[in-house]
Amino acid sequence: MNTLHHAYIVFGKNDSADSFENKLAFDIKKEYSLNVEGVKFEFDSISVENVDEIARATRIIPQTGFARIVSVKGAGISTSSQHALLKTLEEPIPDTYICIFLSHEIPLMPTVLSRVRVVKEVGGSVDDKKVKDFIKASQAERLEMTKDLLADYDKERIGKSEIIRFLEALIQEFKSNFKGKATEPKLASVLLVETYMRDTNASLKQCLELLALSL
Image (cartoon, rainbow, N blue to C red; front, side, top):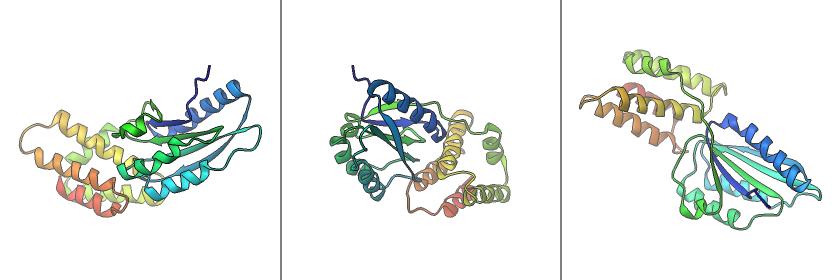
């Protein structure tokens, strides 16, 4: 009985991708006696142009005796990109498996959901102390903290998805431990910055500066 699906969307920390791919490769070898080759993509947020790249990679039929896993990592995928992805999901290539790893759980179109298998992995946690320190810090201190985040991003120590996770942790901290009307504008500011951050055209520097100045 075929227990594998041709397309997966995996919600969770992107460093869980390797273990998921390894398990899928093992299952492919076990079920179909095929060797496995891989194609990997990584984007901040998956755009329509990125979907075109993914589609081109899936259209190449694997050589005899091989299966291909097309692995895609991203912080999110917009509705327009999901629309663009539909054709690739609707016309699977034999022995080709698409794995899309999203660092955050987001709404998916019903037409996408009906064509993929959704997996929820356990995500990595954000340092709780850093979140609390950021909220308690002065405006000048927060600006310095955001500079450190930008420096880590520029040196590729972290990706945009890690910064978005930090924002989500801030939102959760405000919702859980800060109540009252005085908190509402601050929470609204963080939510706004998070929305901007998910826009592929947004300036990371401007988003973080807005965050630092708004709390």
